[in-house]
Length: 519
Image (cartoon, rainbow, N blue to C red; front, side, top):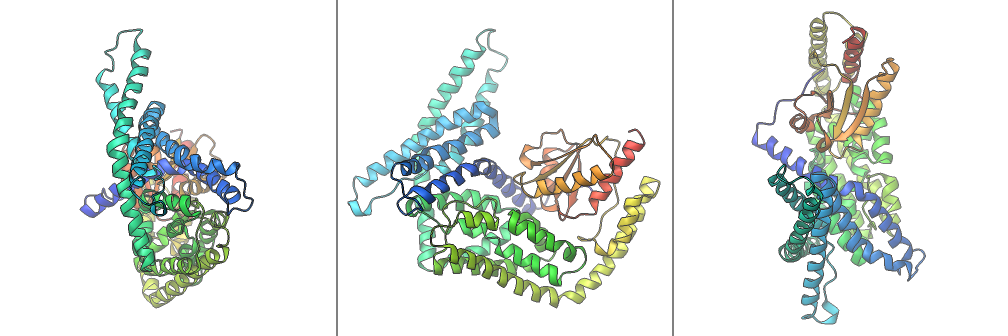
């Protein structure tokens, strides 16, 4: 089994890890509240004036839901990530100040504008994402100042009043500078998006979005920019095309189908299953390794993404609320009334374009890939032999790996690293801790169960939630550096693909050996 890739020392790697960490924090605030966004989408779908079953009474829920509840949920979640319930409460108080400050600012501006040109409410999603960590971190710092210095019997009094007073102070901060900042930022971003739409340049966003996705930077783009802007548009127009820029499953399934027909080795064998998981399960991370193993394929993803965006622009495709996960089922469920043809066609065309371009690239490089695979086989076999030498004995798992070397991906498996640490808690970690890591954990859990090993737990978490309790952490290659920083004392295993990695058998073999030896 291989341990982590080299630490991120290059400036580019450090920058990527930093953006990934930022995106993970944003995702940690947004993803747990996706059910609330879905509920809001259902309310708008049925009860607003253009909904399926208009109801003026129930439609009154829509406005307060998006203007107050959703930002406060995001604030509480973000604050609790930083500093537990205490951080969540203070963050919610502070965000309420930002909401009220924004409303007052809009009212003052509208007082100077004609009735037909007035501004709508700005929903404080970005405000919540700013106020939550700011409030929680400062509350945590303040608590550290008098920790251990409070007289016995006064702890509750100090804790309650300090949180209330600091929440009051942060609400004023939210009311003035943050509300003004976010309103101005939202105006700039909205004008930029409208400018791209008016000039028919919105498809160019795929040039940034598609490469960002395969580098696991999608959360920073999606939750930091597209979701807040999309919700703002949806609250005003009933739907937004921005929800489809990143969530469209077409490019990913097109790439995986190209591998299923024209790929080689394990990539070809695993692509059909990956396509089903990506398209219907909405776990886009499963296609990232396929693109990374041949980066020129990102051009196919960009072309497919641009095709989907263009189709939706021309035909009016849009969603009422974010589609999370990015499954075709979630996309259709959130599709705006009257936009089904456009959205479905955009998915089909984006998949088709990506498939054709990726197929051409894979066919053109087939001879070179076959030669590289042959060279990889020798290196892989040598690595297995070295692994067995390190273990001091052969094993069925490693023998099977040698027999299946021709189907290995990612250049083979490096020699195993033996450890004195008893492995009883294995954690799969990914950005959000929900999609790809849950799938990988399920695969390994089944392998461990079949091996007859009972006292080893296999779970999945977000990298940000790693707490040092894991004995062995499994991550995708691009995320290993961040996982190592969170749990440097654990064994770290990097895999190319959570679905089907030969390293899982090595992990099972190591755990089995420990149990047989009574470690």
